[in-house]
Length: 431
Image 1 (tube, helix red, strand yellow):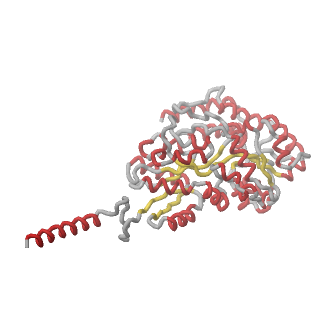
Image 2: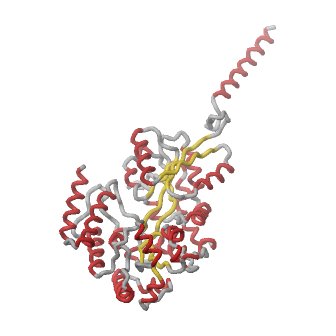
Image 3: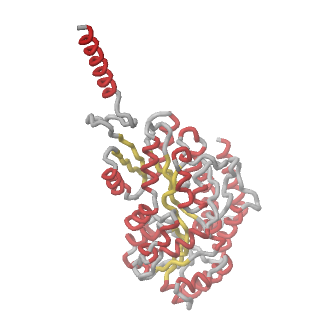
């Protein structure tokens, strides 16, 4: 009897241990979702813009049935404001979040609110991406990676072939790139176009300003968060160049995204735009009368710059950091960056995509059958880095831009407007 009782006690202990293990969840750290399915993990993914990531999420979920990803897409400003608020509060942040490059520095000051992706395996994929894009995702010391690179916005010269032809200029993209190989040549071609066609060369004072501004190593703020608006600054150089082009009559008054600007793109009421790769997607969908009348060429190296693009980060609130990282590493792989480019025009930062036939031979009907992707790929590889922007980049930018608009629209004195804008920017920094 003693032996039987001993066996019974051991059996009961084994049963209790088994039941406790079952109640505590799976050995691999999985959690139960609301439906009670053992081992399923749900990841919240906040995005903005038209990325098409929802379709890729479905692919990932099919390959990883224990992972469910809930995508929430918002307007760009709303997305970043909500993310900043939740991170500041210490609660409510998603497992995965996109960060737009112009907003990025605003979040870098909260490094402790993000996972270091180097701790999760990012070193293994570092060499797959453009060096300047990758480095901009790091902290100043280079030992903390906030996000993996997604798309980029290399800038190129969009130009109207009909207006170039009317001005007696070549229209072949390689010939145009060879002709406009410096800021001085840009000005000379602009004069010829305007004199021969009566149309402004560039659309707006902002685009003339951004020619040098976007390429600046240091824009309005230094990494120490100090204003960089001295007389010898890169910002002042960009300001003076825009004023000069305006004085020559080369600058239109079409503010980007306004109905007047959209109509001018469609009708050919200016000859050139210094735009990023994502602009061609807008053109294809919004300028039906301009089909076959625009081409794309590389810009002078002095204007080589990036405008736009994003990263994907993992906020430290997540309970599933490794699973979140594994998903984003898959999402931004070269294979999936090619898919995102083909479906939604997201220009790849994984440079191996540039060698894919499907990328190199991707002809654009809107651009007269030109394969524009290699032009932007060349532009991307001319970029040397992305300048620091900082939290107050946009408020300061608006003050300088207002000064330029006063010069163009009201005939105001450029130097007085500059000094007044600098004073307003100084006041902003004190708030």
